Amino acid sequence: MRKFLVVLTLIATAASAQTKRPATFDDVLGIKAIQGPQISPDGRTVIYGVRQWVDDDGKKESRTHIWRVATDGNSPARQITFGDKGESQPQFSPDGKSITFVASRGAADAKSQIYVMPIEGGEAWKLTDSKENVSAYARAPDS
Image: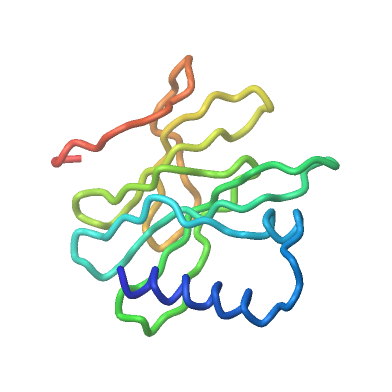
């Protein structure tokens, strides 16, 4: 995991060192941030959020999507969530076969809820139906 983050930092540093001009506002908005990495129970997979700025109806908004990468370094990282409003706080199930995350999906005024999705990807289903936004959660060890 630590090796993965160091490699990402070195790539970003090398790319910026090749540019011989001052950073612009657009350069700063182009920076992607890694958030909340979680290692699977078997230690073979890492899930994490990637936050970036996107254009949405003429204005910039920050969005986070969940990515997955193998810890063996032999497979490329791949994005596994694609919600219009983004997702956050990914966590593995104790058996490592699924993940949960927080997302606001559906209507424009939809509240953030907890969703479940198989680790290999696919459609997520809503686990909670709270009248208020879910801002944080924790999984019980027995799921």
